[in-house]
Image (tube, rainbow, N blue to C red):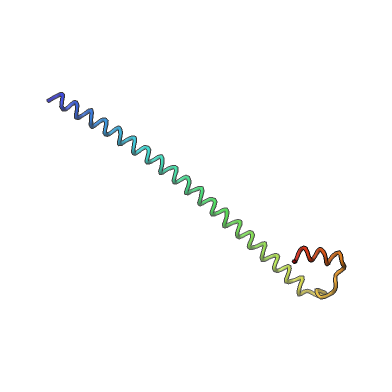
Amino acid sequence: MTRAVAILALIATAVAAVQTWRVERTQARAEAAEAMVSAYEEAARMRRDQDARQAALRAEAQAMDHELAQGEGADAPLSDYLSGAAGRLWP
């Protein structure tokens, strides 16, 4: 009887050790996944910030284009030098 109890205790200890190892491994995987999600969230935030800056730059450039096209003297002829430069800036 004592031998059977000892064997059952040994088996229970082994099962508990395996389960503990599996839980620790699962926790490590969960922590790694959380770290990846945090990294992706940071990358998405950085991308949104960059997109907002690009949109602001585009709007500023469009406003300048509009101002130059509609301003006084916009229809005046340019010198060859300025005409070439303008052609490269505003194709």
